[in-house]
Length: 268
Image (cartoon, rainbow, N blue to C red; front, top):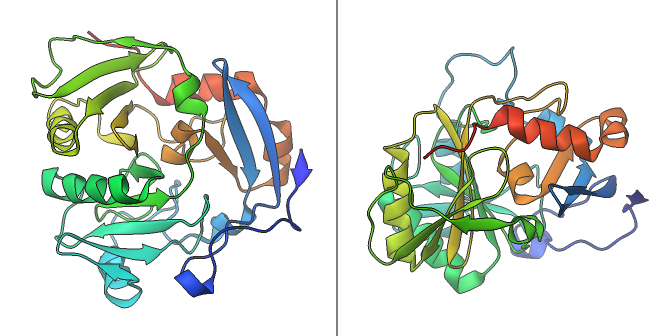
């Protein structure tokens, strides 16, 4: 474990993004791949954070954020800073249309933008760590090693969308983690089509240039192994802790069990 209070961090007022400044970091090996644990107590202040006390309905906070905090606008999405960053140079892409989950148009535009800039896109739905129901994707300039280090194999399940120009695969882990590779337009159509086959209420998505991973969700908070809503950040390879005690106590076997509890057994 190391304390990072004195280290420089990307992101500044100059580019409109807030610095990523965890109080401390640790690394572990989960399913044979590297993950990072970070202590971020500030994220406890997120409005609408998942939990048993969250209200059933609220006003469209995403629309207000997009209207008042934009640092970039396109025809399809508005980009804003993330006030509670869990990654370097992190921003949020909000759908210009009132969508609950990303559709083909939004996915295509966001992944084209990703292709130009590099880094990673991360998506959470309500029920899978999202705090706001309007369709949005997080972007960071970082690319973590966890996903690429996990063993994988091709997949030809009968329920996979028959989209031309893409290849399907899955990670060799004890839960369903579906991957698709190809050109942006084909990947966007494939990911959107996959959601129409999804039998779970919630999902996480992690995308880098040329590939994306979809994690259908059974449980949002896999306590006691992980005491918070498990989101795309954790699927990506960065586990975010609000309390120091939980951060220090976490072990690799806890995180493996959390993944297995949050996801579903491989299908097809």
